[in-house]
Image 1 (cartoon, rainbow, N blue to C red):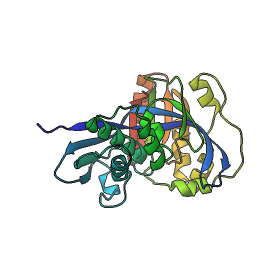
Image 2 (tube, rainbow, N blue to C red; image 1 turned 45 degrees about the vertical axis):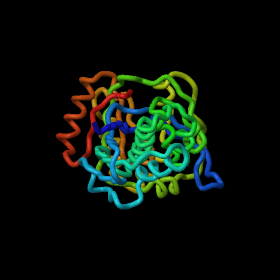
Image 3 (cartoon, helix red, strand yellow; image 1 turned 90 degrees about the vertical axis):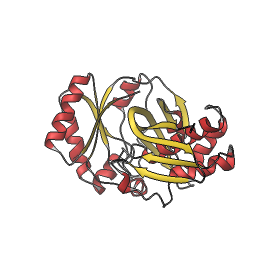
Image 4 (cartoon, rainbow, N blue to C red; image 1 turned 180 degrees about the vertical axis):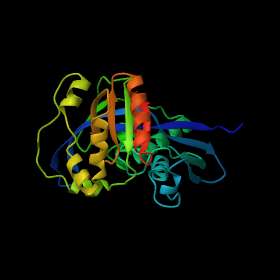
Length: 279
């Protein structure tokens, strides 16, 4: 019987993202709040006679499976650093927009590490998984953890925090991809201070995304999305996630979130819209 392993690669949100400094290694010093939603990409892995990698799903056309990809990089690094996994066929079902600030590629890489760990009998809390995740990208350790956390350093130094499970959230992307490097390069270099202390919702609402102005300058439609979300009835807060272009609004109840999703799809049928909940 063929063993099939399925891992969800949930979208991550930065409830707040404070940029503190440019580092000598080319990265930026961050203070950020990571949370995750119920929905995301799916990753399916089955043993095979040779490695294969395919991409399906609504956003498959945005990626070339023959090009460099975090999924195949995670597969190869797992074998070199952790365990000699057998050849596998990997199908990535791409449901999240690409280059959209919600950790799609990072979440896919983390899901690959989790799936290969299950396949080879590696404990999910094996420290080598976290070490490999850090080598793959700044957001990959948070996506590997998959729970609410405060991130520092370049985002890879994590402290778990109490989350907001079940909180309704609406994700909206206007259909533009923005370059993470270009957005970070557009940060004005001003350290406006770190995130405060207290309950997650309070410090998130008091926080900000320091990359939002640069992203809006590159893709002004992001400001349109934020204006739309902020004006939705019942929206408790609206903000851009990561380096954009996806934005989100938190709601107090599911009915308000569902009504907001319907209103968004009616007014902006060309925008990607996901009604979901935090986990």
